[in-house]
Image (tube, rainbow, N blue to C red; front, side, top):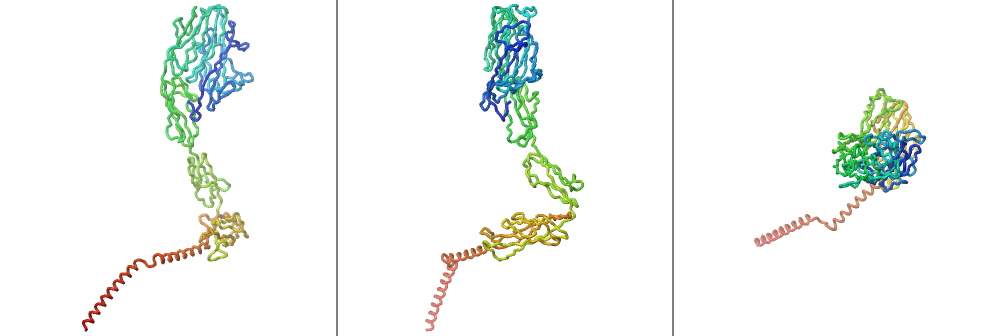
Length: 608
């Protein structure tokens, strides 16, 4: 079965050449050569493999394409009358015998891919069928594999062989099969006896529906009357059952017949066979990126290669556990297709990796193994939160040499940590003041700070590190401390009950906030007497100051208020409710005034 990762589209052709040669002189004989009775005769089976790979490279006698065969099954039926003697033993460059039979490049005879399965021991001879068979695997395109077969010619006048005294002919072809491709070699011929003997032909033909991949029929062969003739081997075409060779002209016993004084024709036909499927299944969880091999169909007897994914292969964080099946016997990742459907199952396991904690250094508390956090497993990509040992009296754990909340890689992680002996804890203090204090600092002004770090203990402390947490504030050089960076200083030593003063500055810009904060912090300190800084406390101090932006803000508020009044006086100087109230009161006043006037006038008339 072809890999889903590399799909090869190729054309396969065998070029199989059979040539005779004497074992004594190891020279190639021409076709139709006369040979001697009762002598050794060696012939060579050459299997060539050709194809076109996915990059369109074409193999040839001078070219190698990236294509290799699966299993090629080779069968050679020895010519009737020749006696099998053995296989030509392969040797190395120094002439020492070797068991492996390998291939060579046709271009220069250098080592090439391809070998006979089982080496010399993998080549078998069947006395009943008078045939040699073997398997070739991984034969590269442009490569050649050769097997030499040693035979012995008979006595032409031996009565036990029923051979005609005057003439004996030997014809040979062999077949090679890979999957559904079957081919036969060229035909070669040698003979013994009378050159002028009358010969009669034996021919082969197919009948009925002939498969497109049926092997080429053997060439016409000729024998003298009375010769013992072996019938050609049955052909092997994947997907078809061959009927065998039959004829009405002679009687065949054990694959042989006596040549009559007439021509003989053998016929054979084919019957199509059913196909059976090979299906892959993955049980359980598997990587999203993995594509399960597609189901494919094969004929009974096909050699099937199991998918190339091997046990232990890693795919996107999963380990493949292998393929299993109860339907067939898998050998060397291949099997012979039976007459039933096959299911092959595989499974994965998600790979987890270990986080292992270890202490290092010369100062380690007793029973340190019991203090170590337990080893745990995580999957790649998991966020790992560090675990810490319990507190131990007289010791302080300095920490792990690994950042917390790290992403788990695709490998085990060993995390180391250290301890130190502790007699007690000390707590320094820190204070910050503004040297040039003002209510408002304008753009371009520098705000100067004085930071006082105090050792409150009765012993010296050292390597006191102070950090400025406002990125716009920077330390300036001074006495008794070292500026490590713009935002960090180190005080080499502070005497018992003494203080060290550090200076820093801030320059106001148009990007300053109306109210700025400068915060400083002691981030580390040491002592020589096994006292350590108390890390349960924070050592911070801060101070606030205003910049010109605050003043501008107040001005802006005033301007906005003024603009609001001005707008109100031009567009709506008297609220509507006041106008309505005033109108109503005005009308009521007029009514009261009118009523009083009329009443007064009426009273004056009565008096008169």
